[in-house]
Image 1 (cartoon, rainbow, N blue to C red):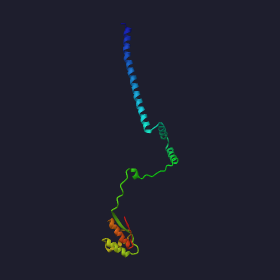
Image 2: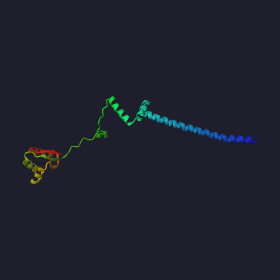
Image 3: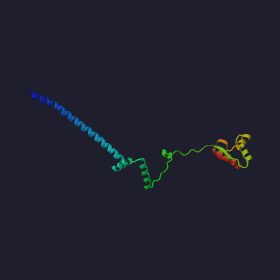
Image 4: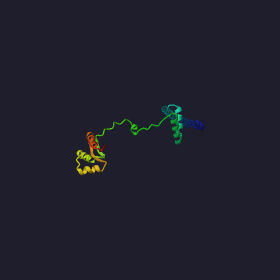
Length: 174
């Protein structure tokens, strides 16, 4: 074989692997492109599935490009056009399930707010429903409002209130 033939054979042998490598690279690039396109298609499908239609997608994009002032005006316009009224939602309602009914108070403080015209009769009743002496009961009546009894049961508190009101005093249960 001549030198030229040897070089040609050698060149063919070296070119074939280069061409093979180029073909493999081209194939890999095409595969990567196909994978990227599939991922993009999935994204588009997910976005379309979430928002519904292309019309909604366009609307969402347009709203996203608005300024805060424009958004405020949009909200006001929508409220007017569709007669929407703002409804205040209490924090308890927004929090979730309704709370249990409020627990009824079982202990009350009995407070005299006014003695009325029969100060002596009120003083006697205060002494009868408490264990206060004459001096302490008089100080209680003179410094109104004053607590006659603390943490009394419901029935006891109502009974004391009736007794004190029957002699002219004004009483509150707290």
